[in-house]
Image (cartoon, rainbow, N blue to C red; front, side):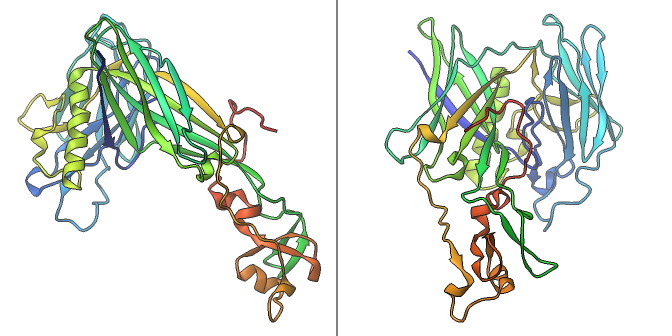
Length: 380
């Protein structure tokens, strides 16, 4: 027998890094819980981990207080064997710790000294994360959505957290050999500001939490985790998704589960009291409360998937007409063409051809990376 529970928990302010070390959690709470410490991040062996520390604020304020992440704190990772790693403040409530190799027989916790109080997470032995068995995709019908599937197997009950990073290649529909020089107010030979090749990147804004329950000596997760529509330009050339898997305890799973329920049920982050949200962070020298959950792991597992445009049915919606200034009544000048949203393709003077920026400049499609990622295959 197999069972799967999938829950999406909202990440606020910032997203998980590729090392899966930190998820910012900026709690918007009723006034009677203002000032509670919020801590996020995970202790992972042989990893540079970032811990985020902030405070809660009132629902009654019109804007997020500007000093919400100005935290003067001391943060460190401590082992029951006396080992410790001091985190260095990076600004905006971020603290970075370069961890060495953890001992699987030693318990570790996070310690935060702030405003005269000391907060600690529950000491835990590091969990070992199993590999992701497979990451695959399927387009069930032509020009239908492309579903991403993740598969994990095991021989015992297990709880997991996943996040993913997407990267996709973008190519211009046309290559510009002319451009409009704004300063000179005329078309000149060359590509100008247009880029014909680039990449874009996005880190998941949702944390996927799942559990497998073993009843017959075998446990399995093999379900679609998200979909991409067939006209989405992430699929226009070559798309990659890189999943980061981390094994978590049942208690940490319940934290993410409850966090998602509260968010989805109220339309905001907290419709109920924060005391109802599970946490493993306590104040050791007073009754003050904190929000967050710090896990401890020996490792995380990653798996990358590529989807080539030629292997799916992609619906082109870019719309790239080729026009001349003389096509308009009355004919437009070069400056008028540019001001109307057209970009020069080739030629000069009245023979210049024009189209939309999105057709010749991948920046307009969202490209921000212009050096090929080291792991990226060369697509012909």
